[in-house]
Image: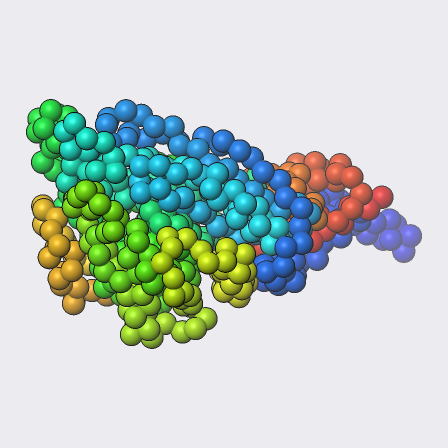
Length: 457
């Protein structure tokens, strides 16, 4: 009997060693909804923040053929304890010729205080003006369209860059919120609702500005989502914040389950019309002549209402004023946060970060026009489409599961790879390193599974 007991103890000790289940490690499996996530309201400003400025997220060729360096500023909450922070990206305005990412610094800080990871990005600016003239004059309508197209490509590139460092920043990669003002609003609307097979002919190889291009053509700008960081999957767009922006055709928004939308616009906006007009429509001296016609938030609201968007997925604040801006920025900012909070909570508790929608599918229709006219922007036939979430397809991220360990302040303390994501084996080398962590509570994510564990001695 004594020998039997001793043998059982030896077996038990062997199991502890080989299965890496030391008594000092207490593991509690959590549901995918995470208590930390569900406990957050994403509305109240309650966290301190940290910021990284001037992060280079890539380079891209600008309108004049020169390489532009693209940067972003990035805010994250401190001590929020959330291993899956929602991502929100803001795009500044400036008519595609000016503006700065710092315009959204304050807003990003506010969202980080609410629990978001919030970035504000720079993007390629400028377009060819007519001979002997300068911006905001444009050589032709195609130039403005191409500028907006480059901006949305850079937005997608920035999003994929942030996906690639998501473990470092404790960010959920399954979806994102994108917001912008003026030209930034046009950019995010294009990114959310205009897919590859809806791109305008002038974004492909197009008749050149005399004396500028090669072989008489402005170059093809490439796919709608760009090529920057194409090795990473593109997050699904959960919601759009359109601040006095516009879209060329409201029928680009096709279904009630397209991305949710918040809008703010003043009825008499003199720069981007709330209804339907060329960009810069009130500017003198022929400046708007080569800008294209766009529908502002008043018309977009009608489209969303007609499609049956619910109040949970659409809110438009149409203010009776004549300013290209806000009547009360603080009130609008709170209203936006109130709209986004329930969408964010639902997304974080129902979506799997390890399998999310990525590339746009261009199989539904083929745009063959090579010119851009007012008719081209208003009378397109979109009757034979069957698209879900703007034609993105599901992509599983990796063959092996990433092991990420964070403290309750959301700081990354360990990251490795489990060669067997099924959970049949957890490398003992990982646990050896984890057991050397200071005494305390930690959150561990292995693939789609999340655990809370304590290091005790």
